[in-house]
Length: 159
Ligand SMILES: C[S@@+](CC[C@H](N)C(=O)[O-])C[C@H]1O[C@@H](n2cnc3c(N)ncnc32)[C@H](O)[C@@H]1O
Image (cartoon, rainbow, N blue to C red; front, side, top):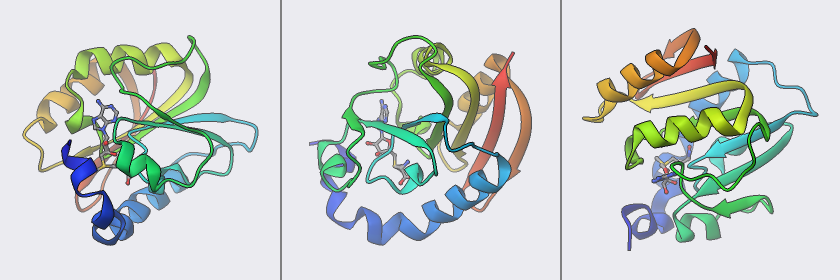
């Protein structure tokens, strides 16, 4: 059983408030129309999927997905996304990238499935943070950066 599967019962109690705060910052930072299609990578229980548009979530934790009430959630990993090229107007990923086995593969996939904008929120305390930051800077045009207490949120467009 993976880490997030093992903590799934207490996940919301532990993290709901801080993840909702990040979601609120993201929603204030981008203007997403109702008709937009958004992919939430590493959606977990769905806290980070609270956008007023067509949202699809993907996550490899079965136990977190069981607690996600959305009917548009899929089992999957960022490194191999089960979607056609350009399927989404937005990709968001909130406090999930430090868990990805390959930042390189996941960024390639994120760019492939999204024809619009990207919001990538990275955990500052992760040992992978500087590698994630460098990869974001190399692969996207960064339009805005907001630092909150635990994450740095990168608002990006294609290069
Ligand atoms: C800190 S949680 C964040 C969950 C959610 N975004 C939120 O804001 O509550 C990290 C999430 O990343 C997911 N994750 C781990 N490895 C992943 C991968 N390779 N691809 C996509 N998601 C992954 C975990 O299952 C977990 O749901």
